[in-house]
Image 1: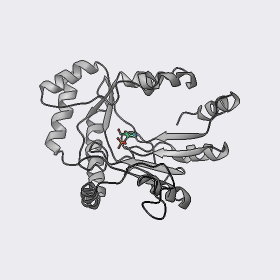
Image 2 (image 1 turned 90 degrees about the horizontal axis):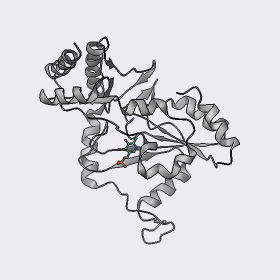
Image 3 (image 1 turned 90 degrees about the vertical axis):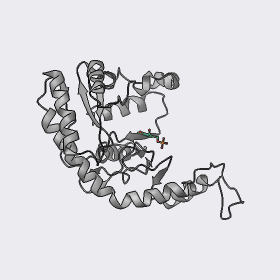
Image 4 (image 1 turned 120 degrees about the horizontal axis):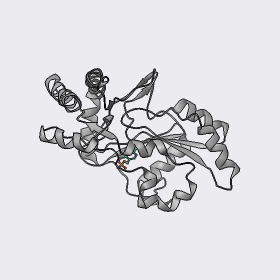
Amino acid sequence: MPSRFREKILTLKNSNKNLAGILSVDLFGLPANHNEIDRLAKEHGLWHVEDAAQGFGGKIDNNRACSFGDISTTSFFPAKPLGCYGDGGAIFTDNIDVAEHIKSLRVHGKGSHKYENVNIGYNSRLDTIQAAILLEKLKIFDKEVVKKNEIAAMYTSALEDVKGVIVPKIPPGYTSSWAQYTLRVDKREELMTYLKSQGIPTTVYYPKTMSQTKALASFLKYQIGELKNSTNFASSVLSLPMHAYLTDEEVGYIYSKISNFYN
Ligand SMILES: Cc1ncc(COP(=O)(O)O)c(C=O)c1O
């Protein structure tokens, strides 16, 4: 959690910018610092939405991702911690009025009867086949998270002392569901090419910061500061293979090839 977050909120509030809320994003399976963000949101009268697309299955102490903020959203896209075989997602809230409104929006803005439309809505129903897949996968989900934590621990202990590699750190009290296991590395492109030649696929999540995308160029006027950390990360992050069905041999093969590369 950036210690200067409160300072940024105050800067925006004191400018003429219309600050309404906070969208916090869980990344790679690790929840953001929601306790602190919830506190700041309340202190400044802002709404707080937790984007738990990548956080599902993560925890802060015993509180699960998707339980923070006023509303929380998640994704069941295949690359996510709980993935279906197509598209899907869910929204969580304790606010009955918000829940009713979202249910209406989900089905073309329906009212008490499906053809009595009271809102301009969407077709956002979860496909029945995807729901059936998710129900089955949900039964084994907690076991998969435990297994992924074992795999992450193997990667971390093998790679934490390798010069040129920075392993991901999980803060005390937090649990990650390891949507991705992401290193920061020197000589990224060379490492990727070498690993590919050894039959190991890797991916860059993400090569650009949001502020570097064309789509958000018109919002740059709202940016405060230079975003040095995220810009540095975009040029050094590399995600390794990570799923609950990797064998110890496969994990060993991957980390030994990375060690070989730097040694
Ligand atoms: C942090 C985050 N938010 C939102 C989304 C969007 O999810 P979906 O494509 O299911 O709408 C994604 C997926 O890429 C994500 O990683």
